[in-house]
Image (cartoon, rainbow, N blue to C red; front, side, top):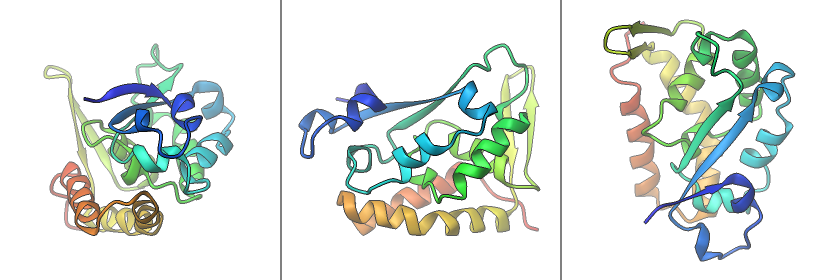
Length: 180
């Protein structure tokens, strides 16, 4: 049974704390952090010391929430400050593919914020957004993620088989990337 816990509760748990197992984690990023490109917290939380509780329990269990843009009609990846925030945070090798829930669109939103040649088409009637990526961009993104991803998998005890399955699941979320 999955329980929902804040990042604060997980970060302040002790090693071996059974309460963090099977935990869905909500990670909130504020508009203030985005507009001021304050990446220290997210870098420390997600890329810091690999013995942190988040590393042990949050593989594929983290839902990212961006607070403060509810009244903005634009998609997050269309907001210049958000794109800059994600680009700066990504320079610190945050393994988005390790943490982000596959069910969410976070990995694709991150990719749309990083890639120059990606596109998103929104169907207003069905209220769905189709994201289009070039195969070379997706490959580069995954390759850049692999070192930090593999390190977290190793320290958190994720088997090679489960790690590869995770990468394949992430790849499926990108659909069929376009040939460049």
